[in-house]
Amino acid sequence: MIDTKTTILHQEQIAPQIFRLRLLSPRIAREARPGQFVHLRIREGTDPLLRRPFSIHRVNRERGEVQVLYQVVGQGTRLLSRKPVGERLDVLGPLGHRFEVSEEGGGVLLVAGGIGIAPLVFLCEDLLRGHAVTALIGARSRDGILCHDSLRSGGVTVHIATDDGSLGHRGLVTDLLNAQLEAGREAVYACGPVAMLRTVSALCRAHRISCQISLESRMACGLGACLGCAVKVRSSVPPGYEYKRVCKEGPVFDAEEVIFDENLLSGH
Image (cartoon, rainbow, N blue to C red):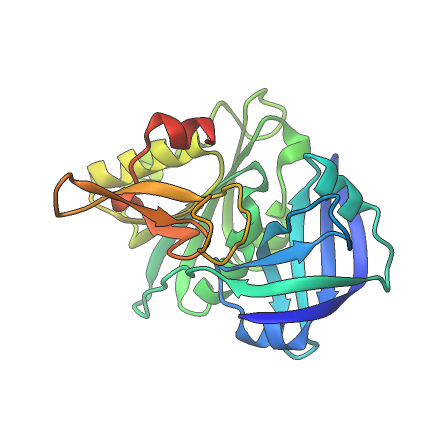
């Protein structure tokens, strides 16, 4: 884990309330792996008090650059979206447990809901070195479908679903999943709303296909000390469950171990 200062190289709005941030941080770029995240201090002082976690969206190791794709949802991200090029930010990273990628070639599936596409683009760059990749991308409307063009240009087969039918299949992205699983896949990687992840996990279990999911959670320290991001997971010893930290043992988990209880589904 690296505690350093980073410089904003570029920031652009790519969709309503969606921004892409490019940071200069050679050490983090060199060490980052797909599925990990950075923890940014938005500004000095106590308002906002806590850092904000952001999935690593892409890296350019030669140029020492790290990209973050984020959605404005509150004060912290609203302040971040107004940051100018050249401003310095305090950053911790890379943090958390990464996606595990099989060295055996084969067809793999990415499932993204909304801003959940963010960590899957970085993962996809690794997967394309030895796997055929299909991506299922879902959102409420066409404005929320992100990164599909760049994935297609990179050789990924992309299928889209929107709740309102404004682009692709009308309905949930998980509506597309069953047919893809029946076609046979080596593995599934997913990130998005918890309800979507629960459905993805259940379908993969039914088809006996390995599935890794990236969970989003409110975090305070980001280092595993405060236990504020703990989620319930299955255990082989009584009482049959334990708690793991999204910031430390996650954010990537084997879908089989996660218990989708009411606390997780409600975001508490």
